[in-house]
Length: 73
Image (cartoon, rainbow, N blue to C red; front, side, top):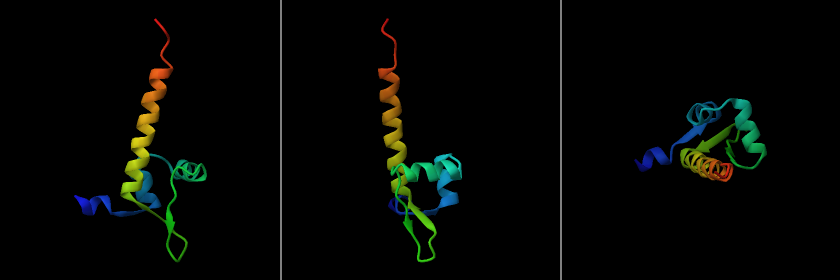
């Protein structure tokens, strides 16, 4: 299990894992929400744990905004 958490993904694998497009991944990076490391050739790589933490943070923020956006009944 720990081996899966430490797995390193390419940008294409990361977009499939996150369920977003490559342009959305680029936008997420420009916002500073994900910071990949680069290979000596300049290719982006992502630790799966980093992606899981991003997903968890966005879920928490989404849940919080859903609660805050509820109209008072």
